Amino acid sequence: MAGCAKRCKQGLVKFALSLHKLVTGTLNKDKADDDLEMTMVCHRPEGLDQLEAQTNFSKRELQVLYRGFKNECPSGVVNEDTFKQIYSQFFPHGGRVRACTLFVSLPVFVSVSIQTLSYPLADASTYAHYLFNAFDSANTGSIKFEDFVTALSILLRGSVTEKLQWTFNLYDINRDGYINKEEMTDIVRAIYDMMGKYTYPVLKHDAPKQHVDAFFQKMDKNRDGVVTLDEFILSCQEDENIMRSLQLFENVI
Image (cartoon, rainbow, N blue to C red; front, side, top):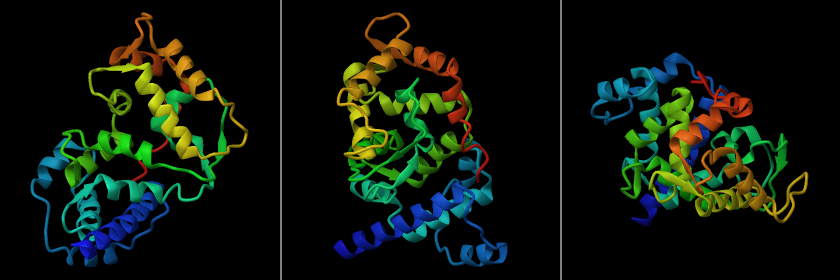
């Protein structure tokens, strides 16, 4: 069992890196090689036509994504620990990452001029926990291919409203339909942990609180102490930087 879990984890890390290349346009596959690999997949997902109708991916794109998902993890599900291992591959010991790549976090950084940050001693586990919960919309404790590809479809090819609603759900930790200051503080601290102990330019000690205050100053239209989905969407639509960030990964697959 342990060996199977280890293989699954190693395979998913490999798949995640390949997917990263796929969505950033750096993975080039020959059609003949792709067709050959497709014949090696023994199991096909049920309801592929239904997934095609429910997402913004073609049947062929779904087959390619499923091939990697299923071949590398035969169980067909990803638990939270494995998901954290995958996510940590992108923040292992720091490095330089454009802040705009974390577009689902951008509303936190409203009106903050940070283009490129250095991330040494990064710990992405807490943020990965919240991200896992956003992918696991049914709260089953695992992510199936359907969960994965549905979220990916929204983030890459969904409408502005769909992307913002998905982001709102990420921030709404207790899923009560509101974002409160405690939830936003937890999210901001998780992002800072992911950024690492040190940053350049250096961020002040009270920066998380400042970001939360700025978030609510901008988003909490009626000043009732919580942000609703309507307030969140309206505020984001009024911000040109956020709107640009939502377009970064459109049509990259």
